[in-house]
Structures are given as structure tokens and as C-alpha cells.
Image (tube, rainbow, N blue to C red):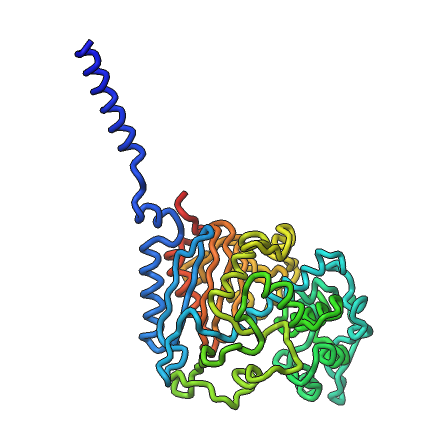
Length: 434
């Protein structure tokens, strides 16, 4: 019996050792390397952003990435204000410009969920300011604008995907003077006054025929105000910002000492601080103006905007707050542009994308190394001062990149995306190891 017991004990020891070897706890490195943001990726992102600072292409930058509900990367480089050596950090407040647009889209789609409109309803059904509009059809022999009736009315879907037809001065020289005189986006206008002025101007093209980026999202803000019965900024604060605890995201920064300086290239190519007399960059943010644009104007921190992105990757809910239904987020992240819409301005520069409801939507992977990297199914947008965010539902990843530089830096966005996902592999969607 003693020998038998000894053999049994020895056998149990061997089995236990084998089990321990097979089930040994993963090292921290192994855990990190199961996702997109590995230790290698972190070093790649760090070196990429530092290189942009070192080459004087940007003055300051921060990036925050969350993967599978875990913060996997944050770092910041350079200055929020170079002249006072104020560092760019997590508390830095930036002008997000067109990254305001997805917030407006979410506000509008909350009302859609309540049954207050359908996407293919005519805009004029709720906003008679846009009834009886005309379309520019060229010029008469005497130089006078020729106008014609639109082939169909503007729909609410049109204003969510930039196909409404609203004219731009740079695209329609014959409209430039009219647009200038109308002062549609004067910061002294209310949204109602903005809509009344815009509705009196001709359209630049027939609704649904082109993708032309512009004022459509400001019209969305007006519609939110009209349908909800509340001032747009109040509606957004009560229904999106406060529930998501986005406490610093406002039109006027709550703490101007945290507000970043914007830099722009001078005639020699060097970055210089934009002066206070530039109204678009600085004047709008100094006081609470009547105009609350839906297409731009909000300021935010990288943590605040990441909360918005995490709500989207979590299909409309985050940290106890439900902002949208999952099916509504899916609808917003679904391409709404027909193949017949071939005139798309600069949208193709974003990659092989369509456009959903206030987001670009990636339709296919990059075909070569010159294209911006990304995942099929990703939806995203950016801002004029080169800010960027995206939602990658495939890898459950959200990324926010904050910077304040003009002109818009495609180079920064290309480099950052490559740093996150690695080198572009033609036709291949980046996926985490699983």
C-alpha cells in the first residue's frame, strides 16, 4: 500500500504540474498583444505623433484610444500654447468644428426615434421656410441668373447626408454675392433667422444629385429646435451632453485658461498663432452668441469626446445613459448615398467611403498604401482644425485625436491611422488577434 500510495501521489503531482503549465496565467504583454493596440502599436503611435511635433507640422496633439471598454492608449505631445509653454494635455479644450455635426445628428435622430418625422419626409413639411425653392440653372444672356423648379423637394434624409442642394459660393460664383449679402451664418442670427434667410436663396443643384458639404447640419439644428420646442444648445445639453457626463463640451469654453491656441501656416510655411481678430477661430468663442450652429462651434476635451464615441460603439448606451437605440446607431452608420451620386467633392479623400447620417462610412478597405487606413464598417468624422475621431465596431475600438492646426492635415490623419493599425495591407481589413 505505501508503494501504491507513493505512485498515486507522484502521478497526481505530474498531472498537477502539466495542468499548471497548460493554464499558466498570461503575462501582461500577452494580454496587451491580443488587441489592435499592442505595445508595438503604442510605440508606433508615440513616435508618429512626436515626429509631427519635431518636424514643426503641428504644435500640440493628444490621442485617446479605447478598445473593448478599456483605455489602451493616451499620450500628448507639444503645446496647447507655444508662446506660454502651456502643455497640450487631457484637460486641454479645443475647437472641434465639424465634429459638432455627429452630435447634432444624434440629437435629430433622438426625435426620429420618437416618431416626430420620417427621413423621406419633405423638409418643408416641418419647415415651410424651405417651400417653393428654386435651383440655379445657369445664366441668361444678360448675365442674370436662370432659375428652375427643383425636380423634387428637399427631404430630411438630404440634410443628413449633404445632398439637399444648398449652394456654396466657391462652387457657384453666380451665388457668391447673394450668399455674402444674406449673411446666413452671421453669429447674431438665431437658428430661425438663419433658416429664413437660407430658404430665400436658390439651391445650387437639384436635391439628391450631388454630395456637397456645408450648411445642411445647421438646418438639422434648426429642425431639432423646431420639433423639440427647445433652444438647440439646451436640447443638446439636456439630452446628450449631461447624460453622457460631457461636462466640458460647450459652445463657450467654461475655462478659457484651458483653451488651446490655433496655429496656421504663414507665407513661409511656418506655424504661427492665429490672432484674436480672426472671428472664425477666436471671436465666436469669446461670448455666448445667438447663433448655435449644428455644423460647428462646440468645444470639447479628448475625454469628453471619447465618451460620445464610446456611446456609439456601445450601440447608443454608455455609463448608465441610453442616448439612442442600437438600430438607430446602425442606421446612422449605414451608407445613405446612392451609386448615382458620383459628384462627391472631396469625400473620396477620406478613403473608400460612403456617407451615412452625419458620418462617413467605410465601404471597403484601402487598396494601396497611399489610402488612409481603416476598417470596413467604421464610421467617423473630423474637424477643420484637423481633429479626428472614429468608431470601429469590428474591433470595438474608438479613437479621438485632438490638435489645433490649419490647413486641415491629411498627413497627420494618414500617419495616425497607420500607427494605430499598422502598415496598410492592400484590400485587407485590420483585425485584432483573436
